[in-house]
Amino acid sequence: MTRRRIIAGNWKMFTDLEEAVALARGVAEATARFATDVDVVVIPPSCLIAPVVSALGESHVGVGAQNMHPEPRGAYTGELSGPMLTSVGCSYVVCGHSERRHLFGETSEFVGTKVAAAHRFGLTPILCVGETLEEREAGETEAIVGEQLRRGIDGLTKEEIAATIIAYEPVWAIGTGRTASAEQAQAVHAHLRAQLVKRAGAQVAEAVRIQYGGSVKPSNAGELLSQPDIDGALVGGASLKADSFAGIVGA
Ligand code: PGA
Image 1 (cartoon, helix red, strand yellow):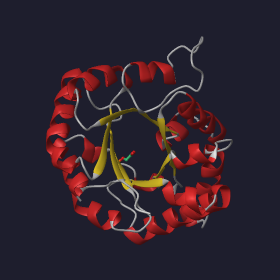
Image 2 (tube, protein in one colour):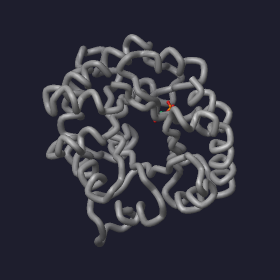
Image 3 (cartoon, protein in one colour):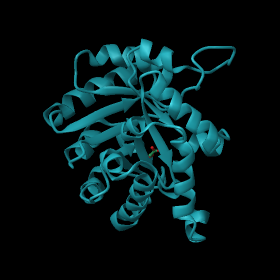
Image 4 (cartoon, helix red, strand yellow):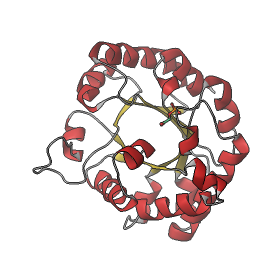
């Protein structure tokens, strides 16, 4: 089965309104010629999703959120819900980014409730998993990401699993300029797919798109994306310039 590639740019907390609108337009223009082959997604700060959606108009670029709360509404000061996100034209949501896990204390169980809620409310979740340097050096990578995956997709139907995007992002490679080698990344992706086979069967596992994230740039994207189990990239720093992001999409 050939899985359609998906390249997503996580803008984190780096753009104001003017920058976000300009970057969205730049990305749409610079990636237009790849639109038939690749899914392109931008993930702006939440308060800028609506203006980015309107700046993108009818373009091929999808829009995602960096986080959401699993409940549809309620007294959760400072939080945003799935129905709110879809109401402004958002179609993807990142769940359990390592910055959410490590800086804001999100547990794998809580991340799993977000993934399930995303499906319930019509959003495509991008479930992030990844080990720290300490865990890698202790030989725990497969156990850590396997457990994050297991809890992240807990309770999902097979159809929902097939429609979930997984992002393998080794914590030591995020924003550090230090990328996992293509072999290191492929090994973990293959492990994740093997776990998916056990959980949901080969057909579902073959359908799941697994992105790599962590210091992806135009210069290393080609090698990473040529690995058999790497189906896309979740890009931070290099997604903040339309040219470098388009370079990754082109790869
Ligand atoms: P980076 O971030 O590309 O800047 O390493 C990746 C991410 O956090 O998704």
